[in-house]
Image (cartoon, rainbow over all chains, first blue to last red; front, side, top):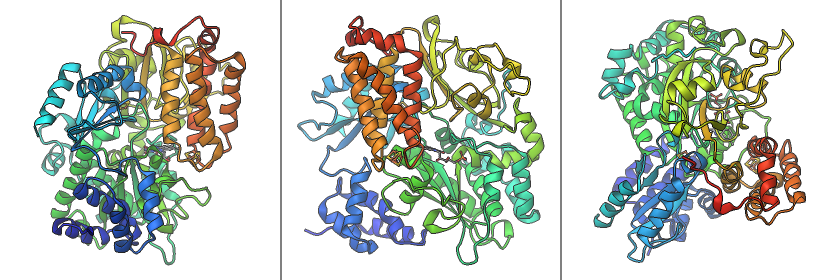
Length: 159
Length: 452
Ligand SMILES: Cc1cc2nc3c(=O)[nH]c(=O)nc-3n(C[C@H](O)[C@H](O)[C@H](O)COP(=O)(O)O)c2cc1C
Ligand code: SF4
Ligand code: FES
């Protein structure tokens, strides 16, 4: 089974390549496109990106392992990141994380058994003024309370 | 005395304030870019930028105009403008508001900046998590292009300018400017040895200026007012720290948030007049003045500047919380201004637990190139953990100082100092708290970060 970009993403790549003086510069944006499509970065994707950008497989591998947002194995359908860094911790991030763990029955770093939600901690997400906060997929949820967290997680289970 | 302004933040409160219509209508958006491209030389632009005394808003406080003036045309290579919107310094939450609520100020700043430094392309490096910020910037670029403000001939001037949004993929270190350039080039975000500095060899080996996102966003305002007029708005104008900037307040205050003020409010003013006071009416244990890499200050620290030539002399004998926040004033009291976002820790917060939280951050975010940073960071984290578990000896506690001191000055980038200096700050200012754990008088289970 070999990987190929969707037509829509192929168009985006073409546009990306016009932006930089080197093909290599499209490496991170292209990996994002691949991950959007596939959920995680497999060995096939690494080979694919290397070939498309005419860079070494080891280079792409090095990039993938450097950045925390590239999933190196399959993850849940939804991603939940609870910020744990000090400014959030001062406003109760610890209990928000604990609440998520209890409600989902997993620890940070794990995925629920139905594959719906992966729970993780994050380092400061630039929302310290509206702490505590968490990111769910692409959305920020700020000024959290346990009740708000319940509503957000319950909704996620349904979509 | 606090002086509120709203050059950047006026459109924050207006419906659709992020759109080009509102930006042009309400704050004379793009008029300065037009004027620059149609009637000014790059020398004039740089001259005004210098007079504005804009100290870099990314943390180090380097004078922006001076940085621009380092750019020399290269016979064969193009020049680039690279905007740093990696905002990841713990406690910093200001750039995000500009991108989400006033993205056109960034684009207009990029147009002026490109022209001033001789670049035709600006890359805005936004951390990947900020999806709304990216969307707003992308939207602003499309709108500006449609109006003919970007592209082959902005405002009819034969000087092409393109602005592109580029993203990282989750790594705090990509905020360090040379790591950011590597990341932009599609590499691991590992800082480079300097020299060469970006102005000589930056993005793709070409002359590059790196500006923080807020730094570039304030440029249209500074030039529209005139460099000197802009600079004079600041209480610190006479020590070359000009204009207005965004201030943040977070942690244990009643009203956390971001405001725009003339440069030079004090920490006490930010806590009480902006932040609405400390939660539960408590006293302040300490503050982190501008992002976690800036060493803490406690309210009982006094300024010692008996020498009249010392710029801090007017505040001699006063609390450091009553000194105007500025690049040089904060350096003068033994810390750093950083990003102007103040984190407040109320009395009752365990400083050992707070330090451990931050050491976990630094351990996690070290890029691993330099042994003192990689290993030292891990040791700092591990040892503070051991202290909290009542398993450390006085020797372990003393060793923390040695570890931190061995990181300082022995690394490729300033992340090392950013780890060691706050560690030393906590150790020096809260020594009795650390000792209480070592002696077994205090237990982790009783320690809290949320005393109110
Ligand atoms: C570890 C580290 C992280 C940094 N993170 C950021 C950041 O997130 N955003 C930023 O603008 N500058 C950051 N900086 C500072 C940049 O290296 C650089 O000085 C700045 O972007 C220059 O812009 P300015 O002169 O406008 O402040 C960081 C520096 C270090 C050492
Ligand atoms: S000081 Fe730390 S973060 Fe900076 S280059 Fe060295 S290992 Fe990397
Ligand atoms: S510490 Fe959580 S967003 Fe900054």
